[in-house]
Amino acid sequence: MTHVVIENCHMCRFTDCVAVCPVDCFHADDEMLYIDPEECIDCGACIPECPVQAIFAEDDVPEGQEKWTQINADKCLELPVIAESEDALPGAQERKEALGF
Image (tube, rainbow, N blue to C red; front, top):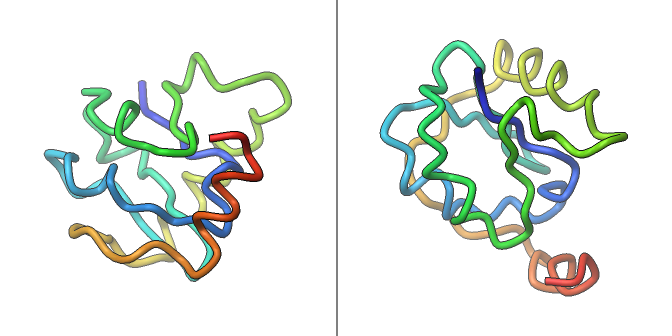
């Protein structure tokens, strides 16, 4: 099983999750992060680190968010690995508040 980043990450891109990941399974574009299902070891260390609750075990992806499982897999094939923490996107704090966190 893998973990999946869902739309809550969009336009936030907090990287607290990347800092605790024991493998290089995170990939990033200019808008969000994605988890490579081939690299994820299903440890779950990333889940409590996400300040916008955007990471779920594949079997626990919320209803209506299932498309993100395939999006994560596809995006990881074309995007670079992100292995270190970076600054969140401008406006990420406002997005976090808008999401209720």
